[in-house]
Length: 330
Image 1 (cartoon, helix red, strand yellow):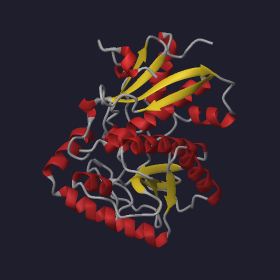
Image 2 (cartoon, rainbow, N blue to C red):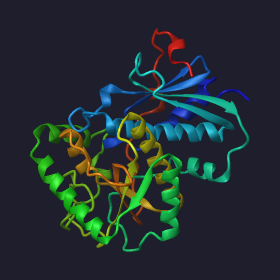
Image 3 (tube, one colour):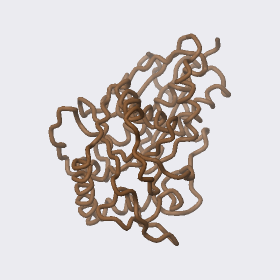
Image 4 (spheres, one colour):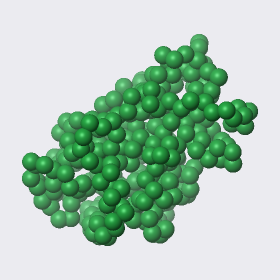
């Protein structure tokens, strides 16, 4: 069986899958390159890094990890086993986040194909959710999805969720006073004919509740404030460490659990402002026995929403530079 990196058509399929991944402010900060038709490289795109809100590159790595998971699914459903090396050559190429070889393998199992089929259906949903609670068997499936990628999904109880919403509101107030942060946010949330960023049609309505269980980007146009669910179901995604490898694992875990949620008809959105503030201020998150928080996730049952814009697959491909291939071979 031919390698999925060997032909333009096959590699285009991989590019398309990777490009559907969620990313911070829909920056889509990744590039993919097929090397000699033998393996693929996933690279960070430094021009799309949020330099104010993401000085460590944590959110960039999480975003690229999500794209890597989609790439793995596309490889697996093509009848191959993906063999992944994370950060294979940071000394010579710090932008190189992962290298992927393949080997022929048996057909993909049903669940893998289910997840792959949901790549184009997954959405970040910033609309009000219903009062219906996500049942425990679904939450258990989401926890298992995170655990399979080396992360931990911790569901918060009623009081912990309320405390976290207050913490989000405090972070929002502090970030509102940071001119650089606000300018960066506006740069990625302005309206217009774009292939990236968050246009107003995916930002959701204004929230009439305090504290708000959804992020307010300030571009509601004709939609007035509305009430959201009375008891938001919140979770945090954690990793044992807090370095680039952990961030890449968190991104893969995030995408596996989001696609699993999509299989179950569960919607998700994010409240990561406290994490932005933590990264910007070089603070450490409070010690928790379950690890370092990488994502704050709101789960529930929401209405159908439009997809955020995406760059065409051709824009995601990186032209091979003139460098020694042996240095990054896997």
